[in-house]
Structures are given as C-alpha cells and as structure tokens.
Length: 293
Image (cartoon, rainbow, N blue to C red; front, side, top):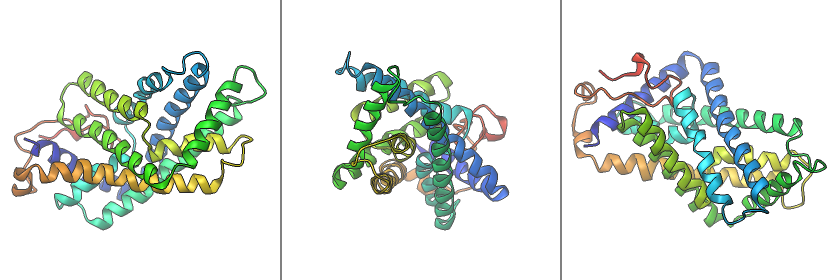
C-alpha cells in the first residue's frame, strides 16, 4: 500500500545526496531559497496578525493558518531544500539502505545552515525595508504583534516547546508524504495547504519558520524577554522536536507500517509505479528527470 511512496521518497534521498556531492554550494543556495520562501510566508502571516489583532482577535490564528499554506507549496513546486522535509526523506533513504547515517547527518547539517542563512537574509531585508517600524502608524501594530509573539516563543517551557515542535513537523512531513502519493497537482496543493493550516492555527513550533520569525523581533528594538539566548533555545529544541516529528512520527511510522516495503529489494521496487516526486530536491515535480519509471 505504501511501498511506492516510500520508494519514491527514498529515491529522492539519493537524488538529494548526489546533487549535494556534485555541488555543495548549489545545495546551500537551494537551502537558502527554502529558508527565504518560508520566511516570506512568516512575514505575511505576521503582517496579517498585526493588522487584525485588534479588530478580529478571535479569527487571527485561523486566518494566519490559511495564509501560511503557500510556504510549503512554494518549497515543493518551485524546488528548494527544506530541512524539515529532509527529516522524512533522508530517514526513508537510510531505512531503505539507499543512504548512510553519515549522509543523513551531512545533508541535515548543510540544509539547516542554508535555511538559517536564507531566513536571516529575508529577516534583514524586511527590517531594513521599514516594514516593522514602530514609529510608523501603518507598521506599529505589526511591530507590537511580532514583539509579543517572539517573546512568548522564546520563553516557552521546554517540554511544551518540544511537543509543539514534534507536532509541527509531523504535519509538515505529512504534507511531503501525501505529495509523494498523490498524482494530481491540484490535490497536492490542497493537502499541503490543509497540513499547514493545522500546524499554524494550532500553534505548533517549526524551527525553520522560527529562524526568520524570531529574528524579526531581535533585529528591531526589543524588550528584555527577547534575547539571542532565547533564539538559540527555541531553535535548538524546535530542531530536535522537528526531527522526531518528521523522522519518527512519519518516516519510521510508515516504514514500520509497510512490511512489503521492508521486504522488497531496494532496486527495481518502483517498476510498477510512475509517481512524480514533489520538488523538495530542487527539481520540479513534473520534470521527467524525477519521474519514476
């Protein structure tokens, strides 16, 4: 039942690693792109949150969740390297014996660093553009919203932060998983969007989203509750939780739940399927080069 999707994602792991070994700079740039795409979506929902916080406080989280769906959709369809998606893909590559643990750790490290660089770049651009200027009446409510949210995130109790992070990447990787199982691009968009609505509206913690989101609070004048130590604390625990959510709650869970995938040979297991890969490896989903024959 799940074998084609597992083998599709395992093949993506191979493709990711080959591209990374071919050009580490290219891989880093693709990772920066993912950080910027997610960061752009964070800026969008923070702008919406700040604009509506006073007028419609009860609807803010739902509207933010609806609007964040574009983040993973752009990552998948435009093509880029997202750390949290790779938590699923590389795990299945290792379990399918198409990648080593060393390969996995190298990919995760460089992807995470690239995501951080891209997130930092877009946060810097947004702040320099004056879009969080507390002295501008048009942007002051957004600044206040960002400050309050960032302070809250940086001071969450560790257990709450960890569980929220596990839940976040469970849903992000479910989006990647379903994109590998669904042939219709319209259906892929809808299912990815649904996962993003769930994770943002529920208040989960995503390490890559927080890379940009928390920096927005740090790069403008802020209170004592917003610190670089708080930034490191949140990203560290969120990264750990995201790994657990993607690698174990999705990757390992479906691997254990698919005895056929574990039993069949690694090579040739995909012969009967022609499922396009979602473009989380830098290539478009419709590209013939990534179609499984």
